[in-house]
Image (cartoon, rainbow, N blue to C red; front, side, top):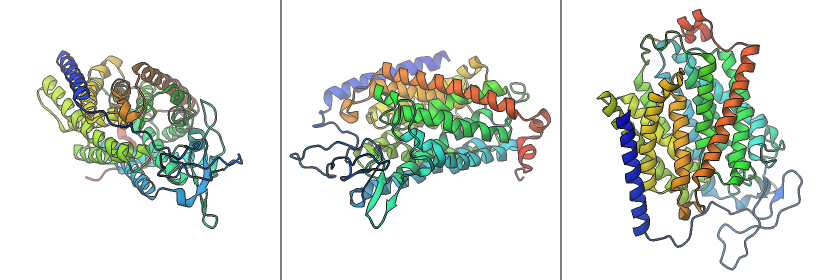
Length: 483
């Protein structure tokens, strides 16, 4: 592991030197790019508040005075919706859903043993359905509507207010994404709410009862994911006001899922014979196919988070691909140095590590910074899945904390270090990012532990010994993989 540490240090020093050099020789952009601020005119508050002042047209002349932006969801004229942005966001939504179904199902299903492949895939599929209904009923409202700094309001429960009034020529928009219908924005954010708990499955595969999993994930999506999304992504959230930068989910998705997975691993305990016998993956070909779907879908994940078909979305797409490639190569090099051979599983894990780490930074950094972020994450997550995992003595079965937790932490902190003010419009702060990391980590860990203890007291968490030995495919579903 000392070799890996020296490689990390060397890459970090080289990358920082290159960034300093590039900043000295590159011309400064004439004006900083900023997040889309165009707001439809004649906005009407859905919850009965007074109509807001008329807003800027989508392309304003220098002489036009800026109008006050929307501060809450509202109805606007249909002609104020940006067709290109809407089309891109619908495409991005489909790409992010593809990451879970079938991406995560294949990625995880290929890594578990044959006797638990169906259970793993069934868990991911059931989570997608369950979280979708909960999002519709309550989670979207508490995450993305104005309220306190800690929690959103209840006015959009059951998707209330997501209106389209054909005869009146009106459509609902979110104050977070005023150029697209709120129905599109809510669906885009739903795909994030789906994939986050689906990632947690990798920490407890092959031993958690299916019914207990459903209750835990259902409660977790409302009690943990909803509030954290509000803190970071709704403008009134306390971490958003503090200045925490998380473009597409470094904290909300990856740190959140990673630390929750670690808590699950501790409270469930290790699988039978863990550490005593080799656990052979069912089919690494499925894992590679899942990793490929994740790589492609991540363009929607990160570029879609620009909430517009614009230059920032294009930059986010570019840095996402570069970081994934750097992460795959860095993990491969680390594995080659330590184990004297590269592996397909290592390459797949490394590209995911790079994707995880660039997620919070995607709309804030240059492509040169993306190489550094991906490379550092590849090596850091390799250590997280090997050395750190042994230190923690937890059977985090598919390295949810080692890859997503560690990758999210690395990416969030490097966002504060490497955020480019001309691109992001703000100065990054490592200290502010650290506050965000710690806040999400502590809240997620504590609440996950409470929810797991509650479910264990009522239902029990773990399959019995005979059921686990037979495999969860048979014991939980009465199904088995074909020959």
